[in-house]
Image: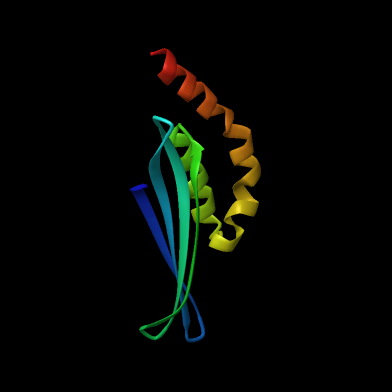
Length: 109
């Protein structure tokens, strides 16, 4: 897994600070470049990290622009890592066929 882009946001509530990182990641899936998303949330009280949550989907699409567009929607709506799968599950299911096309092209060429 390689980090391609990262977007960060910081929110606070009383003495608790929430730091979110939204990452566009790249990996190799059966010889094809696959793009995915990772979301990380770290909670701090003062300088002390009191909680860490992280979730990722490594293979969403072979098209970087599609995954980045999805990443920006997640970032703009401040989606938590614990909701990542629920929010993008249908999208991932709809685009899984792209990997069949990508791997078939790789085998033919």
